[in-house]
Image 1 (cartoon, rainbow, N blue to C red):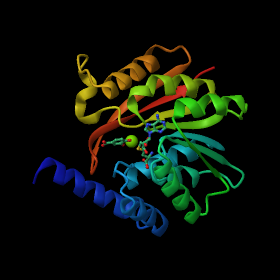
Image 2 (cartoon, helix red, strand yellow):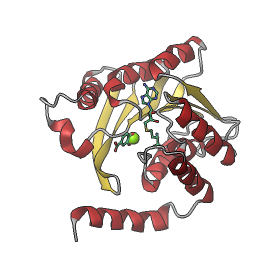
Image 3 (cartoon, rainbow, N blue to C red):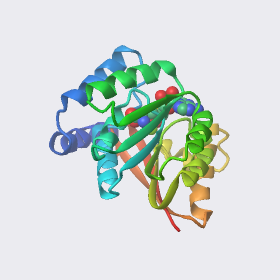
Image 4 (cartoon, rainbow, N blue to C red):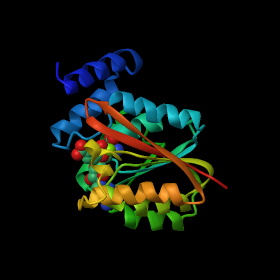
Length: 223
Ligand code: SAH
Ligand code: DHB
Ligand code: MG
């Protein structure tokens, strides 16, 4: 059995018991596929991890950068109380349209606010609105901009907030200081910023599964 087949089997086993069949989430993936969106959403067990992190955090407000078809958005928004709020940012109008439909079908349209455009344009606009600090920020867009997203996340959060970055391993490429890829460089800069920033305490964990070999970084905002 190849290693990746084993990873798939273990993912399927965990998912079957821990984040089993869910019509709304499955429909979201089906419609994302039908619309030709790339299949780069978090897996069901990763979605459940995000959901649990938001619950553990007692999150009332969540910011997501990188909506795609709204799959991770739905996992996160379901962790919010009825009066909670999730702002999600998506560059592609087409992706945002699919996401908006998926979020509505999940009954979360009153909670979720989809902002279309480059996140580096949407973030200053959001900051101008003086929103309440976000309790959790999930960064999952163009990895080259991760250090900028981290800086914005710091401005839009407060003590005790949690920042999560997806795809920080990408098959192990993150360990190569000479890799010229902008996404790898952006991720390395973000990791190094977490490590050196006086207001962040963070870690990163490697993951395997049906999406291959990757990982998450987590950082808690300090006083
Ligand atoms: N969080 C989603 C996956 C996001 S994939 C999930 O797990 O279900 C990354 C998304 O980021 C893509 O939809 C892509 O269009 C979007 N993106 C890329 N560059 C961006 C930018 N500059 N601003 C906002 N979104 C961007
Ligand atoms: C890929 C995976 C992701 O989780 C993502 O956010 C973007 C791209 C990928 O596998 O290419
Ligand atoms: Mg991702």
